[in-house]
Image (cartoon, rainbow, N blue to C red; front, side, top):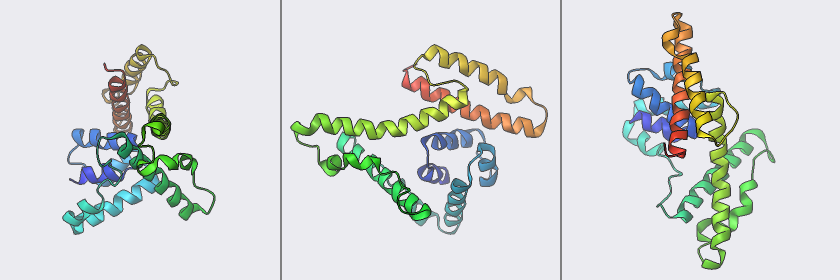
Length: 207
């Protein structure tokens, strides 16, 4: 259950996928080892440590506390939009609390009129759909950038280029190529990121 908690509080979809992939390969690894292997940054590490401490003290309450709070109420596009909108609003407010007024990114608010079912009528449906797609695309662009970086290529819509890049970087960083323990450990972390990236694009292009 703790893996699900970490995935729920992870800031980026890329990290969520990495965590699942990591625990599949190393189910008995401790938290610090996992964070080191995945190269997680300071802020995320502190959140994970706090969640782990809470979980050790009270697993049942912690599971509820850290449940992913931006899960849409249903598959209805309006509910999905509201979930994305709330996530961006919370992130902007948290950023301002930490770094000061005016530092949060509130660009999503131009779509506020479509929140909470505001675009439900047929007259506004197209505008509402555009708003949803724009907010969602911000998440997708950030995630895809991470995946292209893992594959060491520039952004492209050519699946053959992505597939070729995957083979190249996997050959380059395959853990079996390294005998030095530190280098091997680094290669394992990179390989996980590469596999997550390639899985993402296979799903995107229905391969």
